[in-house]
Length: 205
View (cartoon, rainbow, N blue to C red):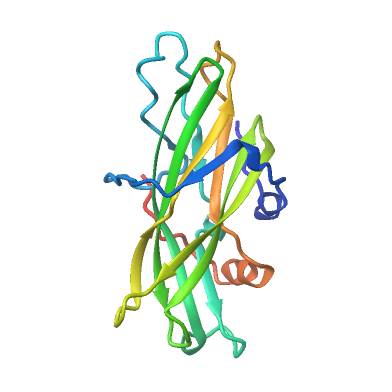
């Protein structure tokens, strides 16, 4: 059975950027609700007869599914600068030759500007951790820039497309890879989520 890591484990995961690629290519969102875990779909059909491993599963720890940023005056609604929530995820995978599995993923988030906000822009850090055989083998942190249109305090944002290439043996069906995804929080933000029993706002089935 897969072991779910503590948030501290995920934050300390080694950054192995060589297995990550990213681009700002257009991303088509379907009506996909976030599942825990979620099996990505869309493996390439052309290679299916000789190389068709299962797609990696996804897990988003509830503790890192929400991002709260308060001013120095303290954690209250009047002092809220930004609140963001991971709300949906989309992705697919396909064979790259006979020894690699290419997985593409993007996250949708709802971002709200609080009463204490002094700018119409915010940068939100989020991460993808790659787990193989219950060991963290890679991590990368991304920054999602958000600009609020004039007169609008809530926006839905799709992150840029992230591509992860995984080495898979040609005979492999179950690939034993899993992705952990969440906001990269500081100690204060993580403690706030834990102390207030923050419940993730994404949908699960």
